[in-house]
Each structure stands twice: as structure tokens, then as C-alpha cells.
Image (cartoon, rainbow, N blue to C red; front, top):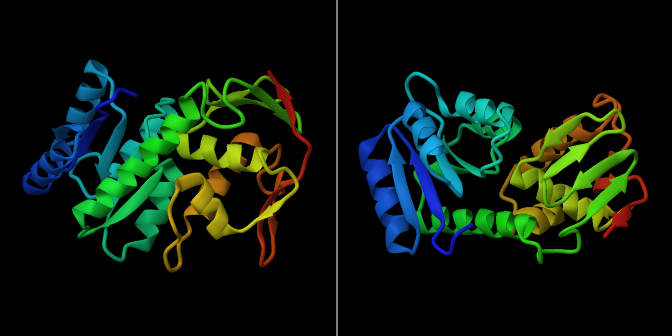
Length: 242
């Protein structure tokens, strides 16, 4: 990531798109607008983007479909989803399709900036050769190999899956604390750098996504278990390679 991060703002409402890009530019970021996902795709092919601010409600391909498609194409660029106020199902679906975080409209621009900075810090820690205990290492656990710098997991049968920034950071939190029960609020703070709101399902959805990439049987998870009234636990030993 460059010293001036490049943010792509995808929203069909010109006033919102322009005000957000201008605000980000005034706060030391490079911001580019896109009126729809076709323009987003064109921009992504032309140059590097550090984060996508993606509105859900758009004509043609909506934000949820676009997020799911980008993840299927192994695009690991962090995505901050913009949702309508009170649309909890959209937020849950957005996280389930691979978004790193969400923010409800209408929003305070300072909150948007704080969320973007938190995601960028997380992404920088995940990719930096000096960031965190796992940086530069391959980690083995329960028959799975996590290549930290490549941002992917490889199962025993050789099947590989690319992790989003949020998934990689969440897995790192577990791997640094094997066999420890970690509460949902603590997981959110450690992995996303923010405090959970009322009825916040972010961690539950991210754990569900992560399980689909590492568990032999997602219906009977044995690597990451749910602890009733406790949170989640990585149920295996961890081996670190230099």
C-alpha cells in the first residue's frame, strides 16, 4: 500500500459519491469515484486500489452481487459495504459474501474515515513483512497450512483458498492464541480494531466464512469451535515455520 492509499468509491448517487471522494481527498487519501460496478471493474483493471467503498443498492449489478463476484475471482482488495439504515439482513449478507466491514447510511464522514483507516491498518499488518507474529511465516494447524504473506490457506488435499484481509486477520488472531476461548467482542477488537455495536454479527459471519475455507466439514466444525456463552476457540496445536 502506498503512502497515499487509493480508495475507490462505488455509488450510483452522484452527490454521495462526490462528497465522499472529496472528503477522503481532504484527509490525505487518493479517492476515485465509480457510478456502477462496470466502472468499478474498469478502474480495477487500470490501476491498483487499496480499498473499495461499495454501496449495496445500485442498478444492474448491486453491491452484494459485485462483492461475491470479486471474491470468487480471488480479488482480496478490502471492501467496506454501505447499507441502508436498519437493513440488518443486507449487512449480514454483505459480510457473508466477503465484505470486510459495513457502515449504515446515513453516516458521519468521520466514522467512514475511521472505518477505512482501521481496515487499511489491518491490511497493512497482514501484508507487511514486519507486521505481527505470523509475518513472513507459514503456519500449520489441523492439516491446514496458512501462508501469511500470500494470504491463503492450503488444505491437506492441496486445495487452496485466498483469504480476504478480514479473514486473514481473524485467522491470525486465532493462530496466535491456540486453544484459548476468545469472546466475540474481543475478536472484533483484535481483528478489526473496533467495538461491537448492538446485535453486531460481524464476527459470527466472518467465522462462518473462514470455516468454509479451512474445515473438512463445515456442518461439523472441529478446527474452530463455538463455545456457548464464551465465543470461539481454535481447537488444535500450531506449528510455525520461519
